[in-house]
Image 1 (cartoon, rainbow, N blue to C red):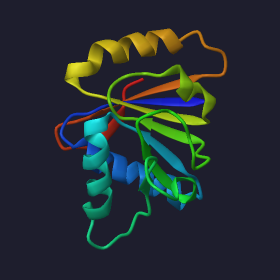
Image 2: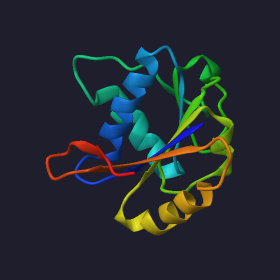
Image 3: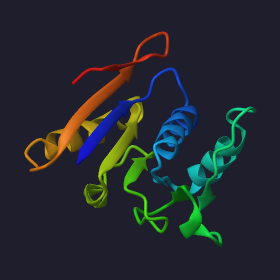
Image 4: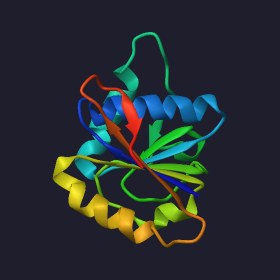
Length: 145
């Protein structure tokens, strides 16, 4: 299983999630986006409006039809939509993410401490491949580790 750590810099969480969700869906996959209660509404709105020329089908776990959504936004790490990829958006690692094929762990300067602890904690886990990504001043993502 692959865990990608994303240190957010110049881009908003919403725009990064939208791009990753697009890629996962384009490859025929499904994505679970785990967020705190406040961010669920913000992410839901952002996925509807992030690019005028595109449509990214998604829904919320607390609404009807959650299992049918290619991208599902939830407060818990439970993939009612059968997703094999999970995006943890609140800076907190959850070991439940290890049950997926791929995890995207997003954090910022405010949550860098817990992200470092998660990075170290996953170092000796069998079958876990870690990658660390950071944005440069132009907004381009670069692999750091």
